[in-house]
Image (tube, rainbow, N blue to C red; front, top):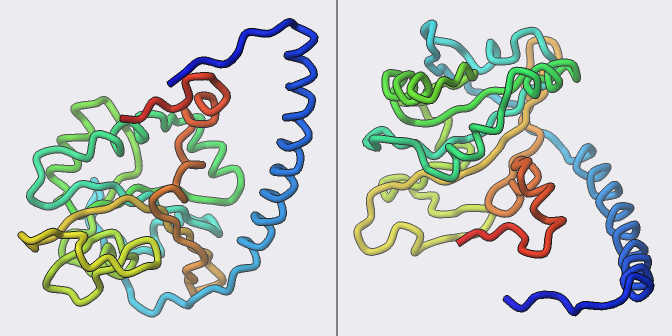
Length: 221
C-alpha cells in the first residue's frame, strides 16, 4: 500500500479536523445502531443445553453464574482438531481476569464454547496458561442451533444470515466458524437476544481498536 502524503502541520490539522467531523457522524450512527440492537426482539430458549466444563456437566442456565446476561464466544475448535483456530487463539489470548471482571461488574457472565471434547479444551487452555471459562458443547446441538458448526448432514448450510451452499466445498464434511451469542435471563427463562458472525465480531477483538487508528491498519493477511 502507498503511504499518506507528507504535508505541513497546518495542512495536517485542517485534514484532521475535517475527518473528525466524519468520525463524530459515525459515532452518532453507531450509538443509534447500538440502541436498535438493544431493542432487537428476543427468542425464548426452549432447549436445556448441557455443556461440559472443567468441573463436569453444566446447563446453559448455570453459565450465567448468578448474572442476568451471558455472552458466549464461539471458538473454532472441532472435535477432530488437534488445536484451536489460530485467529480464535490470538483473540482469546487478549482476555484477562481484569477484563472478565469488568464484564461481570455489568451483571454479565462470559463463556467460551467449542465442539472439541473437554479433554482437548483443557489441554489446549492449560498449555497456554489460560484460566478462562471455556466449555465443550460436544454431543449437543448448541453449535448447530447457533449456526457456528456447518455440517453436510444437517440441512442448514447458512452462515451470517445468508445461504452458503458451497461453504464446505466438494468434500462435504463439517467445519467450525466464529461467532458470538448473547442471552438474557428473566427469572427461570432464558432468551437469545443477539448473535454476530464474520466482520460483525470486529468489536470483540481489542487489538483492532488500536490498529484501526494507524496508517498500516490491521495488516491481516
